[in-house]
Image (cartoon, rainbow, N blue to C red; front, side):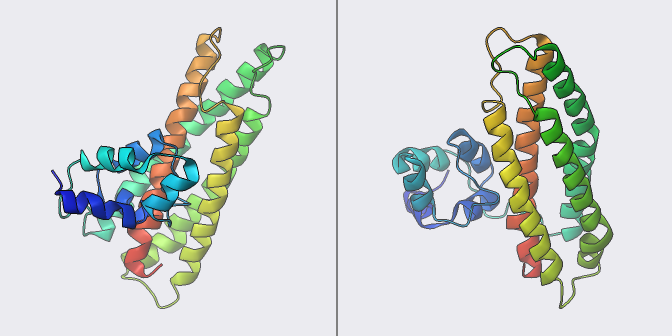
Length: 222
C-alpha cells in the first residue's frame, strides 16, 4: 500500500503519469470520466476541478491501489507485441460485428426515439481510420522502434498522437450517441449486445491510446 506522502503526491502528478505508473488507475479514471489517454497531460488536481470531481475521493480511491515500484515492462519489443495482439487484432476482430449489430438495430428499431441513428456509419468510419492508423504503426513506426529508434522518429510519433486525438473525439461522439453505452429499459438483446460491445471497444481503445501515448512513445522521446 502507498504511504500517505506518496498518496498526497498524486495530486501534483498528471493524470497520464498516474495512469502509466499505477495499475488500476485507469479504471478509477473511467469511473469518474477523466480522460487519461488523449487529454491526460493535466495535473490530477486540475482534472478533478475541471470535472467537478472531489479530489479527496479520487486520492482515496487511487491510494487504495497497490503502487509497485516498477510496473512498466522494460522491453519495447514486448510492449509492441502487446499492442498488436491485445489491441490491433481485437479491434479488427470486433469492429465488423459491432457495425453489423448497429445496422440491424438502426433498421429494426428505426421508430424508437432512442435508436442510435448514424451509429453504424460512425463505427465504420472509426474502423477505417483505425485500420489506416494501425497499418502506419505496424509498417513504419514500430519497425523503427524495434531497430532502436531514429533521430527523426519524432515526426511519425507526432502524427500518431494527432490521430489519437481524432480517435478521442470519435469516442466522445460514440458516448453521446449511445448514452454512454446504456441501452433503454425495453431494448432487445441485440441492442444490449451492441452497447456492451461499444463499451468494451471504448475501454479497449482508451487503454490502447494510453499505452502508446504515455508508455511507449515517451521511451523514444515522443
